[in-house]
Length: 139
Figure 1 (cartoon, rainbow, N blue to C red):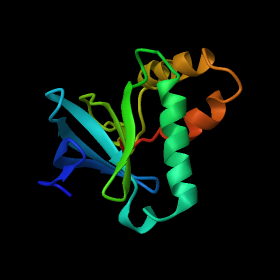
Figure 2: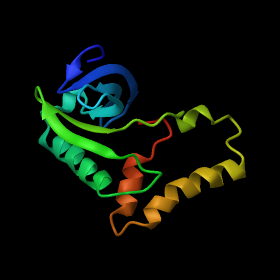
Figure 3: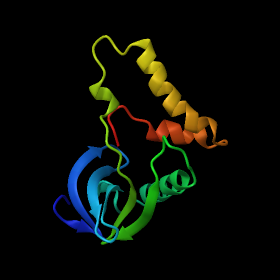
């Protein structure tokens, strides 16, 4: 997919992968901006449950407005591939900060507050949302 296109997005590089999807840095050719493009992994493209989860993730995130949560720009399907286009945010995966001795208490509290703050503004769906989308290894 890197070097190709999906819908009107030029896929530039892979920035993360997990069980729910692969995230690419991409360029929105219509709006001329960088985005994070999350797509289902190849082995899950035809799985209706996975496609439904991706859509539900996009709906849940797009309903939120908080500085610690990326903005969803679009959810779509092109060439048989479901995707979420969202705000690209520069940073490092949390696991790059971890050492054999863990993190200082102040650092843990700093990150914990950033995660808990948006979750505190949500209703009953917050725990499920936070549990699925917070990962030490990035997108």
